[in-house]
Image 1: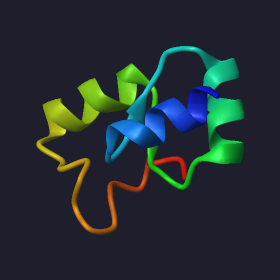
Image 2: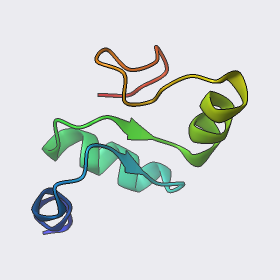
Image 3: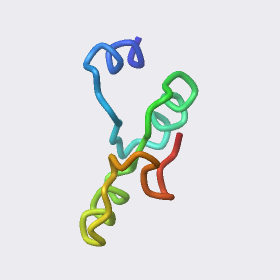
Image 4: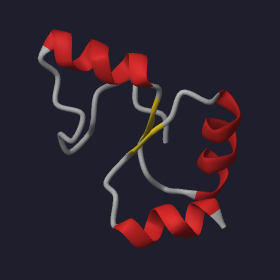
Length: 60
């Protein structure tokens, strides 16, 4: 149900701090999944999370 709700938003990626959510969402979604620390790190380093191949830290 959670995955379906996320897909309905048209989101390009998902950010969650909950490891359990990351594990379960990875199973049902073909979207990049990030922990908030990865988003902050990418911002500091000037990396584009939505580049065609995404940064190497993306979990798919």
